[in-house]
Image (tube, rainbow, N blue to C red):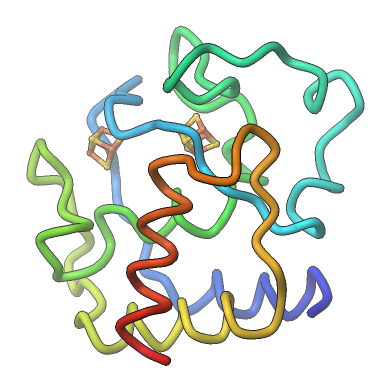
Amino acid sequence: MSLIQIQRQYERIPTFQCKTGCTECCGNVPFTKEEWDQLTPEEQARPTQGLTCRFKGDSGCTIYDRRPMLCRLFGAVDDPKLTCWHGCRPEQPLTKMQGLTIMRHYLKLQRIYDPLTDDGFLSRLAKIYQHEIL
Ligand code: SF4
Ligand code: SF4
């Protein structure tokens, strides 16, 4: 899958306004190789911060325009697993089935690359989704 194909999937996800500066749901997210390769060498070399995402800044995500798929889906799907803890959501969230369809395209066509660990929290979430749809 090319980055353009991934970006086409991004475009299917409705955007919404988060609580200002909030990064509470930011954990160790998995990236595909294409998503990871968009980052600069300096960004890729950022040290890990335990279970906290290395890209979390004082006032939000420091790679917001290049954040990977799961960051975009969280809060945008009408699914308890992906519901924002502050109730932020798009006017018309994706249904669970629409969210799963996007994940299916995303997961099926490539290997998920987790720069931190093979078993990060969101990798497990991705695997749960994979299990549900394949
Ligand atoms: S989705 Fe919710 S918890 Fe996550 S960053 Fe946005 S406001 Fe915070
Ligand atoms: S990449 Fe950005 S949006 Fe995604 S978990 Fe990290 S800080 Fe949060």
